[in-house]
Length: 92
Image 1 (cartoon, rainbow, N blue to C red):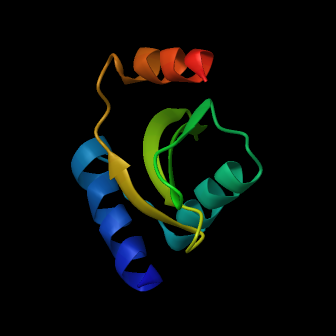
Image 2: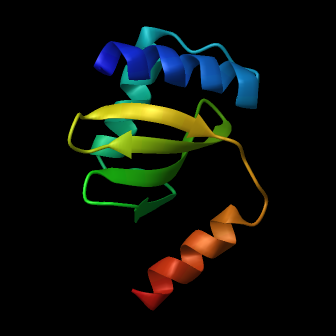
């Protein structure tokens, strides 16, 4: 399953951010999430989190599976998503 998500996330990064990520890039992004060095992070379910992070000068929105310890996908960047996540964190 992890191989599928790795391949899927690389494809989505190309489609949504026009950037080709290597296995090392994916691993580094995972480490940023694990070390809690994200800009914003929000729990979406018992096993998944939506994270906004900076990597090599670009901002990415990532779904991360805490259960599988892998990146599930890259989401498209929509302008107001950061504001919505901040409001959710302030309310919790």
